[in-house]
Length: 96
Image: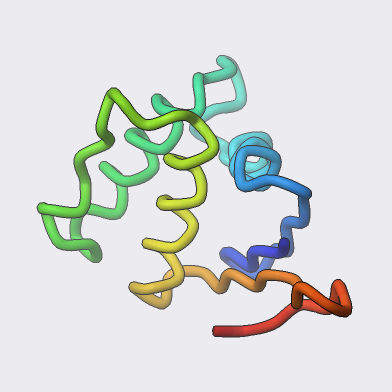
């Protein structure tokens, strides 16, 4: 899958790989490596002026991969980023 965010393209086999790439490029996270949940929470807090309040909660019961994919889908839904998933047959990215 691929995710385009702030002019950068991130690719990975999993949503967690993409979110980790975004974390590496985030200047606010340079000194400390966060858990996926903490990074997503931190990132959503900074986007609170663009994303509805009900969307900002990160459920403690979700596995990291589910949380990371939900985060990417949310950014895509609000046109903050663009998520592209590979087609099942060809492996080529498909835009929903």
